[in-house]
Image (cartoon, each protein chain N blue to C red):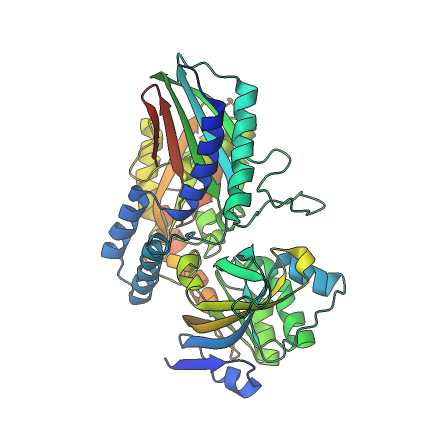
Length: 291
Length: 202
């Protein structure tokens, strides 16, 4: 299967706009579940406004949130796919730039020291493009995540030590949620990375935070932590927007990796309630958009 | 819990009436302000031609489209999507905003800290919480972008919006020392031990 780079560019453009406008069905279901279980009247009103906003964005064909985020493209190349990797990344970058210019949405990206905004949503190393491989035959998948800064600004890494055990992981997650309060636009998806190196641990937390609601960690140890931490986090009473209530998080997602005998790293990265993502799948039969 | 329909400029007395848990709907002028706007105004001495005395500011950097100037778009910008950003980063600018510019109301999400609460008490101001991440809805409350200043900082320019039925917004910090954020935070800290116990942390 040979990939047409013009199609990649178009898809990269289309995906950014789609992600900004339409919330995935699993997140909508997450809202419905929280609205049913929430016991605080004010928090129920806040959730109701968030749910109304999803409908207004669809009805007015507008962006869900003003924050167009940091653009992240995750690419999975299946077996039997023939593609020039360098050209693929260039095509994604062009698509990202074009979406910003042609739709005229806000470029949120600046140089880290000069703070100059090129008004293209691009800059050094941005968009972030992660390339990985999949078992799937003749398929190339691009997932686009506009990662909002309110939640991204609340990211943490702790290089705990083995003697602190898994208690260090649990305590750290609770303390991060308390520290974040309303700044992350709760209810959030709390992404937790456990193990690996410092950089892998943070990356795992990001993968966890941006994973679809309803999915589970494929490491049974991680899945158990997800269950326990999900319940504990929603005991804290931070609530939607940090104004109190039961609905602090849709879920806690955990991703794990093996680590060194001397290490016990844990990272937390959160996704806000506008948990946006969009997906394009290229197959021999054609291109299909989804979430 | 009272509801207030307000239009700026506001007097100190009008703002001091507001109490935590009251709600407010705004009409008329509303100024958009953000990190870079305030860094330039208060750290680098940039001056604005706008008179902010008695006014409300919102922590924002909107999505706008450049258009021909017209009666509908007097600043040459059409609003596309206008929302609210996390206020906490701009904590240290609350007092100078009030002291130097006479701002009375700050609208944002996620809340401000102790120093801002003190400024609201000392100078007569309040913080109104909007639901963050609901910009599509918020945009329907904005009639037009009337004017813009410091536009070299775009999108973090100083925006002047005309709004209609903007809200309801929740008074989350008032001039009498009340802060919903402080209340929720201390209650959550008290629940920390129970959450850790449930997790079996020794």
